[in-house]
Length: 229
Image 1 (cartoon, rainbow, N blue to C red):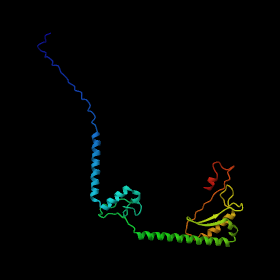
Image 2: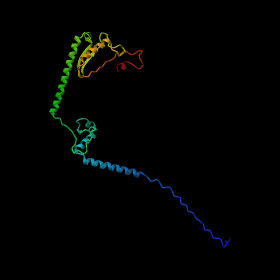
Image 3: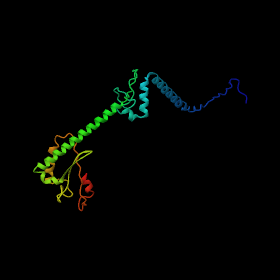
Image 4: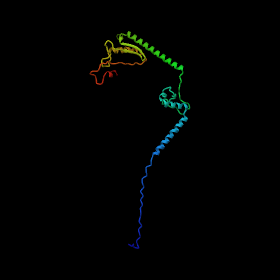
């Protein structure tokens, strides 16, 4: 079909659309590896700086601490410094050029004198306990209250100290069966013996035992074991 002379020929318009694909996710494994490398290098240079700026005595103290920390932490242990440190046996001020290692070698004469001193103290302690025993025995023999119970009071010097035993005799118990309250006569014995121990600096320890009578109608779960405790 012929076009008329007055009309123009229309040109086609072409629109080209390009779809952009999403970028792929970049891997982050190299960042982790790089961070580990930087951390390792920082620790290495820090270690080199400490080795270069620390005195020989301090290095020995640090090495001893990590080899046997309990021994170093104890007073006088190998490698323990005499400086005031928050952590016993730890390092000292890095600005000091002198080590803090303190290791005292005791001579044979010092060891012998220490042993003699310990033997002398043990001898004095035994003599003091023997004197206390004689004092209590005299008081028991002369006291109107304790003379009646002389057969129930036994005194013996042991490695732990002076042992005073108050035992049952003549079917006369010190406690009611299944009870923790002492008898009136037992209370008088304890008061009389307590007066002789007022001037003693040693510690006093009390111990006792229960009878073997079973609990027939007592509380459930309560027996001689709980009573003695």
